[in-house]
Length: 297
Image 1 (cartoon, rainbow, N blue to C red):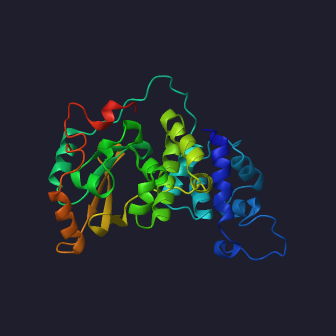
Image 2: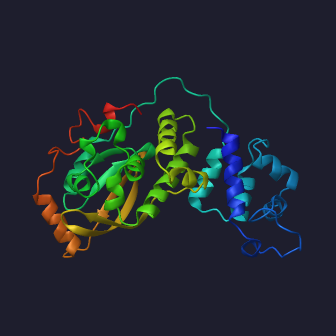
Image 3: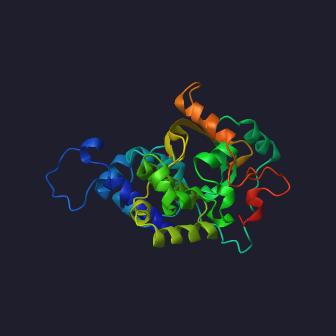
């Protein structure tokens, strides 16, 4: 990934979405050739010179101080995920590692946790939205990841390339776009990740929607929210999800789909839990050969 180009595009798209009124800038009567704020307006809001901001947006200003990053974040009204992404893009580039990236492995205790969460769907995702482990109900509600080839056990790939996802995932367009934003955040953190670059290339070629979402430069770190699924056998399912970042495993996230006790969704999950899956063994329940351990990192 060309970090200078990424930084330039990110800053340009962030200032393009912010109107002068939103930024508290009075109309000076000059015609605007591009949407959003001009470079000189961003520089004034951030308290830096227009020349410096221009060089920064062009990737020619070196590594700015934390104070400048904070000032730019305030000027562009960045949220926490966007501030993190900006910091990643401004970090000094590291040499490309030629050794294989270590595979992500899920700790035995977390496999046990997934087994104990037997009444609701739960799964663990890692870098590039790889599905590292999932319990039985997650496989029944979303898709049976264990039945897929290892490289396809990935949420972004499922949402964007699997026709089943468009039928099963409620608010598909929003969920798919948010998942692309999660990939964007990872791209800033791991610019030398070859598997991430390959995934982005495949999605660019095969998904009509992906290029537009990717070029919007939106970034997202999931925390909580709601999800809807339409299951072909039990109908509509409504969840409130929690995305929990795991201690000692910063690149892994536990996602739990909670339901209201006694609700129609809870009853539907009870039925799903009583039926056999096509693939009878839960993903990665053997700590000797976890799902992610069978693939490169």
